[in-house]
Length: 298
Image (tube, rainbow, N blue to C red; front, side, top):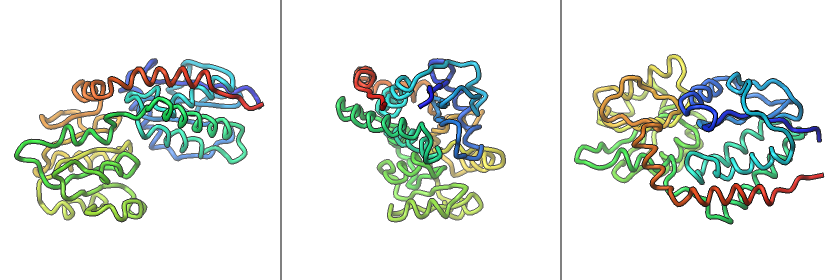
């Protein structure tokens, strides 16, 4: 295999706000199968892995940290996929995100085997150290939206990805109806079939689905671009909207009402840090274990 080069921007090189904005811009771009390399982007990181030096398809990566070698790439990918380098140590979604980034490679791409080995090593590390977050992103609605005598019985979930589906599948106690708003309801209806009292709509049908009753909202999407952002803003500032938990990497609202919480607000980050305090040492142990146990194919 040719030497692997990779460049990255993460929360050690950029602010979460800057990374979130870059991630959201990449989400708006068409997904592509690459003959050159693998692009991995989440709210917390943007990384480009290639079998030869090449310009990454993300301007945020130009001039940033750069490393070489199959072993170092394999170690880093495995550490990321294990959740040992995450804002939430042991988060559940990152393994799938690395897997999906790998699936955008062409089938015979040299990096395919590296990604596969990294995912397998990450799974072993999670099991070895019990690296599973106590409180994950999908648990936050239960902490910030429930309580009090005015909790609505219906929850609006904006989005259709992994996080949105996890929230809809297990809404906090007290929410008896879930309405999911997305750009592509047909596919989402198939994915959430059998979840119970979940209604999937596009924005023109939202008011009818909410039936003029109060609701709380979880924004669990990065796809807030152009006119759609305005539809989301209208939904969360309407007269029946109560509390909002915004898990998008960039805030949907610039003017913050009292009952609006964003993922990067200090109180939200503080809850995550406190709840997962015992995971920090496990994440460090997992990173070290991965570096010691990695095997490079000859």
